[in-house]
Length: 430
Image (cartoon, rainbow, N blue to C red; front, side):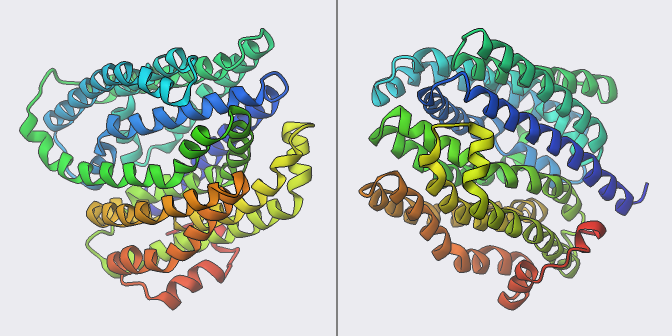
């Protein structure tokens, strides 16, 4: 199959799986809001924040390094697998040690149980993640999509069953564990069958990958705080009810980008990596990717801003009118994030994880200032603060990242964003 056909097939299958996963996620939240309290979603937001942070170390950036490097031996794959699995156990041990501190900081004793439970995902993900990345590297998205769809449907049914039976916040935790378990066991079985796994480990073999991965992890850590520092601050300053409402608003706003962007970005990362030695082709295809993502995201978020009251009523039911203003402000914030999201694929293609790290570190110096000042004006002030920060950082982000890695000028970048060619959606990024 030609590269073009592989990419098109990848987009089709990724589209299918992403839509199904997004629908199941929306259904889960929509149904569970009828059974759970806002405080339950607030607690889960804190647990998810902690686990998201730990997961950055769990991967060690090796997925990006594997996608970037074109020739990898079986011994190198084995060394990478065992160090990744070992890191999962180490991180789970560290999580057990810091959980009491986190629980005390937020004065929520229930976190002592919730965090270690969800922390089991650190170990579970280590058994199958690398095999999934290998399938992605080979552009075999059909198999990946089928597994992801099956796992998400089973997790949805399990979450609803537990919620109906009164498990409360644990319905969210246990369904997440089931999702990880099904997915990673499936990829482990497929990986062992197709590729096998050597009982071999040589730390020296992992060094070239860790060199790329560590910058990636550093950038992701900083970016994680840039993206979710609002959760950290709101969780400390305000009540779990307020955090729960804010978390639901943020999940609603993030959902379209989580539905739209991965469809293209998952395929774009290994595809753009093939053009890493041809800067002209890299720029052309990256700008096509930005154009497609902008063409979809901008109208979608404008629609959310206009129809926010009806969307919230349909998804969450009564009692959530106070988050309408949050959803509208966060839609502007997320529109900007969605446009900048494809830069991750560009970083993987060029291997310039150092630039991403520097940019994210600089962003971390600015974002907390806006969040902190905004917190004096309540949760609405926080949403305005992070949105203003994103607006201010937009042009510097183009200069340091897009321009440095592709040579794309500001007019070229703006044209890719605002010149909406809907036929690009059909042609794809190739």
